[in-house]
Image (cartoon, rainbow, N blue to C red; front, side, top):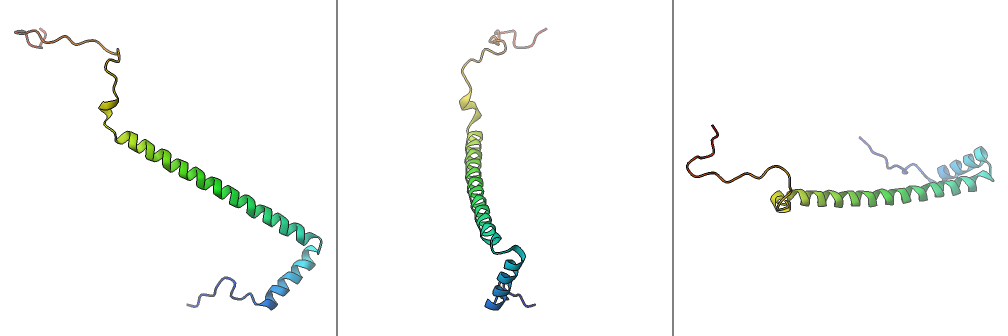
Length: 100
């Protein structure tokens, strides 16, 4: 199997034919506008890619922080008295803890 490079066929003659074809198809006045809009599209793409990279870095950092928080001992973060529930009296000697 023979793999040809992507632009291996692009000799100077082929590139010239493509440029002449583009001039005939779009006209000489449209080509600078097309090139300018292609440059702006590339710039917007790169800006969006940079923003996506920053968002991915922030998401990874937040996930790392959540993992560290979850890995900590859960009993260390409990308050002394939450005020929820009833106080349990100590067992009475001789009677035990069974009711009846």
